[in-house]
Length: 352
Image (tube, rainbow, N blue to C red; front, side, top):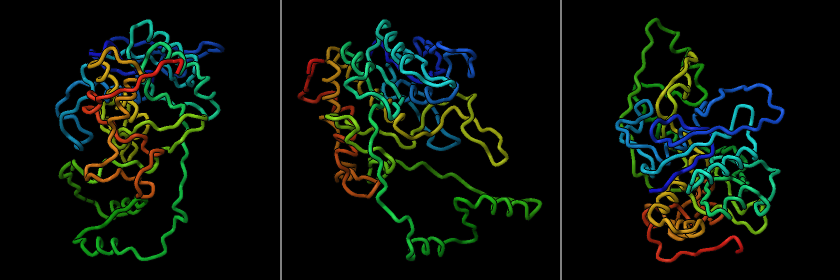
């Protein structure tokens, strides 16, 4: 079992899984706290990412009936130490460094940081966070010093020809009305046209095992990176429409009357969601191989990643539906079971 797993983010309101939670804030010119002066999660981000890592088994987890089933984190036996460094007032690198120093003192094995750096950050080889962590033998996932290249190539965005697929859909509609994105005013008009408006929308099932999968999401950042000599990304991990825990006191949305909707779970996407998946795999490897170095763990994850999808074809890039390049997917999709026994690992030291 991994001794402790540290998440540097908005913190988790989590009960027994949290071994400790602490707050760190820059007090220079500090006058008034805008948000809640507590280690509790006030945004939901930290709860979501933390439960992906070490959430316990929960029956009937769902998002308003969707994706109902048993939920658990990737490494449910890992333990979390939570360090809150991001506040309504802003986030500072000094707070993140203080959290890492505290994590060292607390005996943390792995640090997961679902945060990003600004465009004017210093290069990676001069980044005190990166150097401090690596020299102390820590595995860090998710400190996004990588600002990728996002290029939209499919221009113009107007298709002036006929879409036969749309005709096929419309011709098969019986006794119904299609409401599309942007048609909310029309829906209100329909509702107000009668004293007893009614409509039925039933949820049938959650479909799993979609093929082909996985694929690189269209809005993912591409490499190499803005730092000379550094190639990113290393690997790809699940990041699209992931169900995970959410604080029940924080709304997940609103209905048409602007009433808050609440749930114990929600569905999020993004690099913040991919990060804890990679963290969890690192935690599993650290538990199975406690003496492996950070670079050995990284090596095992990268050399066992899958470059092929579940149809046994090369992973596709949804940006242009072509075969994904290493600058889009890195070594491929992480594969936890294969990473446990990579056969060969490549190690490195800070001097390397």
